Length: 229
Length: 229
DNA sequence: CGGATTGTTGACTCGTTTCAAGTAGAGTGG
DNA sequence: CCACTCTACTTGAAACGAGTCAACAATCCG
Image 1 (tube, rainbow over the protein chains, first blue to last red):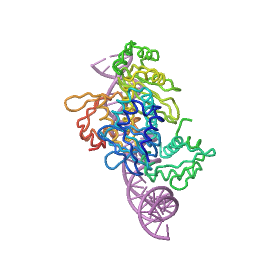
Image 2: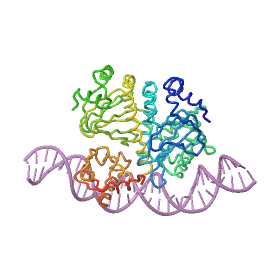
Image 3: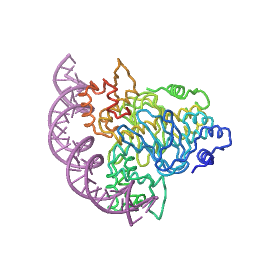
Image 4: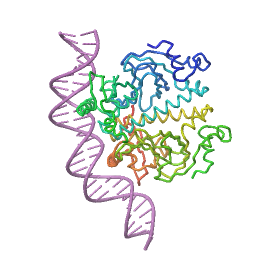
């Protein structure tokens, strides 16, 4: 539940900027601080772009093609910064996977007011670059990998981003459903399920309940992910 | 053939910065100005990231998965700015589709020296955001569209980026081969060919030679591309 | 505990890939 | 300008991996 204090945490933690300073106050005027319950979509301005800071929680960024087909373009977690374009050929929405606190800015105005502050711009640049590099990796996976490679890649990426280590093997509590994984990897829910079964049979992962996944052998998993060496 | 003067054009045209100023000279020290013949790859630093300005020509940014599988992650043309990450799970290379002039910077050093100049940072941010949005659209296509939708989308995107209008319908001289198109859309060369044949049979496009494509009916093409409305 | 939701498994279908053959295009030298 | 040649493109037939449809099982939550 984001109190107004989440704005201070955002500015200090992400940009190293004091909220009381001139830039901090100017940006504060633009901020819409809200909490979004699990399963709801964030109220974005779809005619202009938005910049969203995930104060806490998990979200999926969904691209809508025609005919109720959806592609999850990215998952974002607490501390992440998400840029969302205005609708054009495709529409985008940001949905909470669990109750999440968001700080929403109109993108252009934010950049205009932030551009005076080099440290903010530098952080923004790094974040955007990371998002771009991740998106390219995703494109590689969607274009050239089979179902098993996609799921293996996905699990390794999540292990890295959610990093919950435990005694040598990695334990994940995935905040997203099988359907979300499928919508992210360009596969159906059934195919995801079958690939989980295969990885289980091969002893590479264990699952318990709907969200818990244990990566028993990350090295073998990386091989199946089609990573270089 | 990029003379050293292409650096001035780059700084003035892209960033609106004078090459003779302090920042201009500091960045100049980092620039490697080269010409890359058709079919050759740009000499990038693969242990650190690179930032490449395409002075003139056309290039493809290729991601390499294991087993000689390639995915073209983006095409870039004269005036574009490309950020290339250091190699990790996947390696990237930038190959010239025709003889091209490039200006190559080490990414981190460039950002460090440019961050003093708000106008440069602002342009970088815009460029990165555009690249990210394009990459997401690509991800949507790779994950959720069939062969015909992908090719239709591709042709429309290229028409927009290469913009050669002529008497109502759009005329394209594609600098890339069918193989490149396939590697970009996650399809085989044969599938690309078959889809071209179908679009020709439907009267939506005409082709002549290997590179010339005429979009006879962009509206109908947009419908087949799976765009909203 | 009961009911709704989410995940699993099987049988069959379909679109794209693969393999193979043939055709057109672009560049070169006579 | 034409024949030659290499490469790029096109088309067909068969194979395969993921999708679809359908039934069932497990999990979560009130």
